[in-house]
Image 1 (tube, helix red, strand yellow):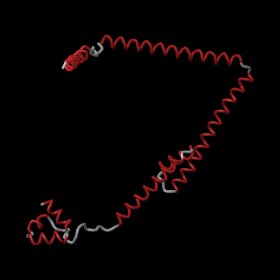
Image 2: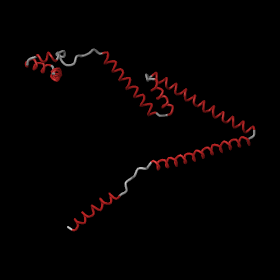
Image 3: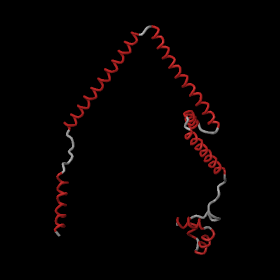
Image 4: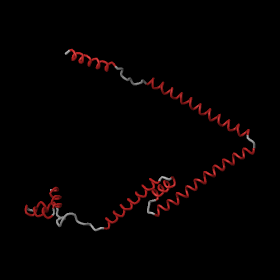
Length: 196
């Protein structure tokens, strides 16, 4: 019994500790204004640092160009022009490859957007995407063919020979006729019974 008294005494202590924990208080407008001002000051400090670094970089580039000989400046300009030309040629080659591959996929029956996405994936070497797009195209073509086939089929009346019965006609039927309908055309019977 002494142990039970100790356990019951310990439980209220735990509850008292929970009640004594400080509650989180919401910041006041003044505190929020102070935090905002501090954040703005830090942002201005970072902006000034970035501006200073940009200015220093521009000065170093200017200083470097002033120290270069005319031949070195011409060589650097040619190197930059060659790099730009190489990037342009690479872009044109990629465009040509994508256009050729897109034409090939359009010939397979893909729509233009899917063909372009597949061609881009092929050029980048992403064969998983290429195969997924080809499979998607096959599934879409199959669905379209199935839908077209279903449209071309004549309508088949659902149920048996009594599919034209109305709810009013069903209500006027006697028990023998309803039983006969149930045996011959259960689907129509259930439909009319549900509507009754």
